[in-house]
Length: 595
Image (cartoon, rainbow, N blue to C red; front, side, top):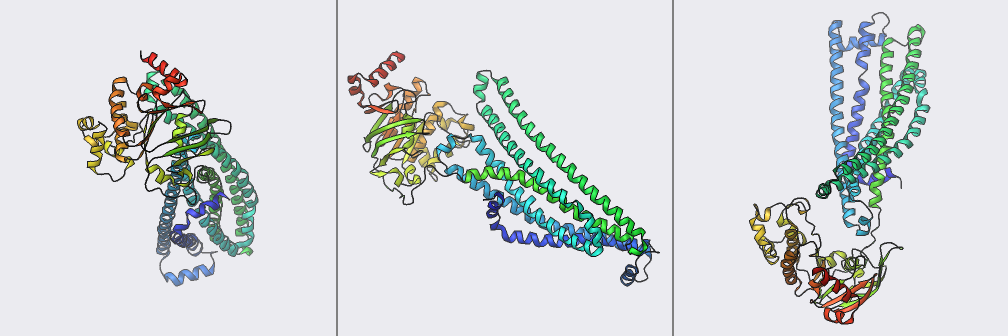
């Protein structure tokens, strides 16, 4: 479907305001058409006492009686001001309505975009840069306001002004009108010629600006690492090169705009010159009955004719530029969810926690297989640790439980229900997670703990913090639970951030717990303290845990060993040591390194 046609649905809810804007626009155009006439009466009725038209003098006589010429000129000049003021006030009202509708449409599109991005699966976000998605929400979305305000509103007013002006000009002097429109074919050609260039170059600018934002965001978000490795000059050079590419793209578009303005401006100057030449010949010809005042009015109408024609020209190029941004927005809105809820998906109210993998295989792409024919069963309340070398698929396996991804083949079930038959929202409401790098939002400690349970009471939040052994350090902070954590939790230590994440899981109180390297970023003493808290969190919950520190999970119970995406061993720590297989080798390496 055409990009412009697709944007119409964002304007439909504001049809009443749009109709009001259209009505005011028509009134404003009517006032604009009156603007030249007071000056015509001054020229033909007052200043030109010899050749002015009799009808003009008669009209002035009826309006002003025997009033002196200076006073008549004063009232006619005052009429010019009043007509201009009324046209401006009406135009102000129409612009207010059009701008408001454009901004409301922008708000709706931005909300739809952000909603789509929030609901799209991790597979989409894994393949995209987060800065590019942010750029589409913040900047590309503004295209809809351009399409409405510079498109619909401008095109409407310009077409009406063109039609009204053309009608008046034809009534005044149709041969002169046709001569003035001789430039129309080359102007249409210029519009079409430059429109293609503008859209292509605008698309290039959007891509390069997005790329620039990505570099800036990554460099600033990793500023500690940049300083630690002394890579400031490298990051600055990276930024400068991307900014230079953006500059080149902007330069091309601006030069295209300048060239197009030169072409259109020259064509309109030629049309104006032709009108003045032919019009002057008619004024000099007494038989033509075309006065100097008529020529002045006609020249004013010619400006009114060329102005909307010029506006339509630039509007066409602005719309092509906006279409490039709108296309990037609709690319997101059109993206299908790779992990959709089934049409008959049900909400799971109560969960005991039995999880079963049956012949599960998974790959991020067809060429990149990660898991192959995985099968095992976890009983309610059981703790299972998954171990194996880097890249064996442990984190991917955990990601299948909350349906961040769906298996390529096979199935994962919870309490006998295939996860694809359960709504994602209800499934995830029964799952708590603690990750290696606890993700905190740039808000208060209270809000970060309560993130998984909106509406939690202060007492519940405090109890969760106490269970996570985070209450002491929180109470020592200047604002307690209302202390800001900084961007990505930068005001807290690694151990403190991890305790906040554990408190969040305690508060959610979900029957299933996923732990992905919850202590690997901690020093041994901190790990020992937090592991006790994690063991408390695991009690009574079905727990899946991943860790490279085998001494941490050796005595927990059941251990599943993965190698090259396959399940190769399954049993307790002691049983696996006795088998002298993969786990035994990994465990010996762990003991040797710790020793």
